[in-house]
Image 1: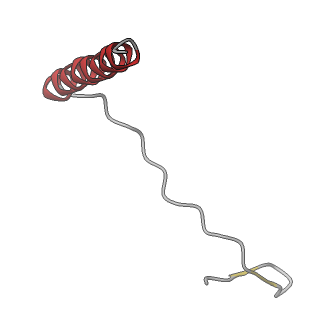
Image 2 (image 1 turned 180 degrees about the horizontal axis):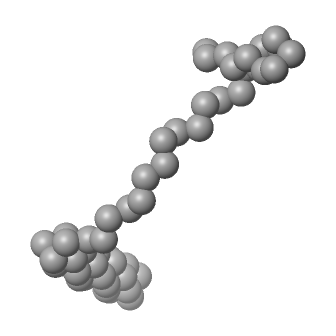
Length: 59
């Protein structure tokens, strides 16, 4: 674990902060991928709800 030295010679074992960077905006390809994944997830959840509805009304 990394230690830091203070002015008086005291040792502290506080965590070091990670390097901060600015996020880059999504590219057009990434945006298309996010839209496709959103549609696929919506279709999957909708399909699961339909299956659950039909199975619960089967008897």
